[in-house]
Amino acid sequence: MKSEPHPSTTANSQVASFQPLPRERQNIREALLTAHRRLANDLQALEEAVRPGAANLEALRSSLAATYTHVCDHFHGEEHHGYLTEVRRRAPHLEHDVVELQQEHRQLRMALDDLLAKARLAKKWEEALAESARDWLHRLRRHESKENQVVQDAFNRDFSAED
Image (tube, rainbow, N blue to C red; front, side, top):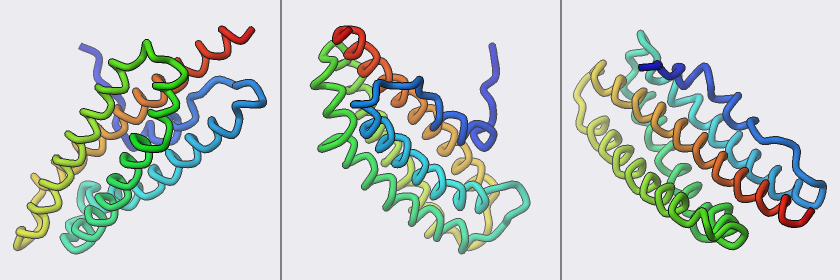
């Protein structure tokens, strides 16, 4: 089984994986990349808080809380007036993928909520909690990469139809 790269080594490469798009679609592409770059920047603080040897429970709590707020807003925006809505409009054949991404949003939110609750209850640094947060970050990075691919597929198919 092929091992996946550690999320901290792939964060920037995943958000910049799109192929060039026609000029009239650049604003949508740029908006997606900007949103994912902002999310990547916010997640960097969480990565720092859970790096091996960090052992700062307050930094972990603070980073988890900030990440929770931003991720919930990010997912809500994508689902209700963002990229997933546009994918549905442009590529109805990708509906199954969109539903799957929305299910992953819920799973990621619930897992992050659980991490935040555990961090708030912790009396001292727990490496197991940091490892769970690192695992969550890895899951989120995979999700974002998958989401980028679905959006790219929707727009590439749309462009091919226009040619």
